[in-house]
Image (cartoon, one colour):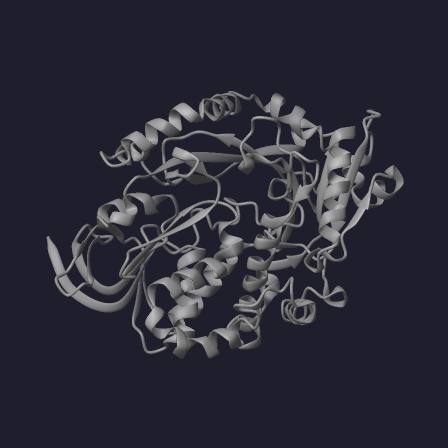
Length: 498
């Protein structure tokens, strides 16, 4: 049974952090535009944006060692860390604007100040961390970072990790107090509540089945609603922000830019501490170094989290494998994503990534006791009864042909846009949510170039550093740091720890 046909300016597919961010930005830039959202689940932020499905690290590259690479000459390349930090500053400015404009009432509902730390074991890793610290602290973006290999100082910083440590192995850490814990699920829900108040029609339990180009260049979407009826909706612009579900929808669009792209799903498992006494002894996000042969998304970290106004402690992630592209997806997602145009790309990726496949199989087969052994590298006296397993979200890593060869696995976020800017799709994973504002500004500049002059003053009002390198403008950087810390309640005097 087919029901009515409607026309609108913008359709956002998926009610996650990306659609929430793009919708909010567009409502500020073009308040008169009509926007519709289609989400196949019952509420917003239930897949990768959900607080239990991602690490909640405000990825500012303060602690993630995979963003700083040791070069063959022994020096440390921090260019990726600089890029990610600058992108995160855009998100902080956008959220501050929403707070200052009274569009968000209480920032502590979604963001808390929390030290970000890197910790390493072994002489070689300690030497690397020191070099990384020296390279980063020369840059104004990373001012305030401290380094220590003194057990007394480390006992002050991370008592749970240092206490009862028997090994004489060298240990060192860096610490920076300007890190954050972000509840992206809460933020997503806050933004969709705001969009609803701006007359954005959010359709839950609506699944986009297909899409076709109409003769006037707009897009015709076939949508199945909660009762099983089919609706047809037309829009001038479509954004596919359906997390792991985006690849299938991109393929259905038929745009040439979506060809020769595949996806490889990786699931995550965290251990969560159920003992409040243990949780109370740790107050930081502490990132370690990935094991040799492990993919970048599997960097072990011990994180304080603030979820539902309660302090939690998580350790992970352990990788897992499921052929589903979403937690609520189908066991056939992987196989149905293989098309004639990406078959060679996918086969090439399989041949190239045998070590990753082996790693994932090993991870899937880990017993709880084996996972405890990895946790004990962080918490020497960790007890099995204090920890439970939580299955996190599915991530679909992009596979595409690059200069590095066919079927290259990408560990990042990718935006695919049609040449005419009428449709954009977001694929990939971390640092995704943290850099949502940067990514959505990229979508806006690629898809609406005709409005760039008209919208630029408003974008500058929302994000004062837009188009400017903060690293090269230390004065503006200081202003941005002070104003965002103040607006988001992250200033030292305002910090509230529960």
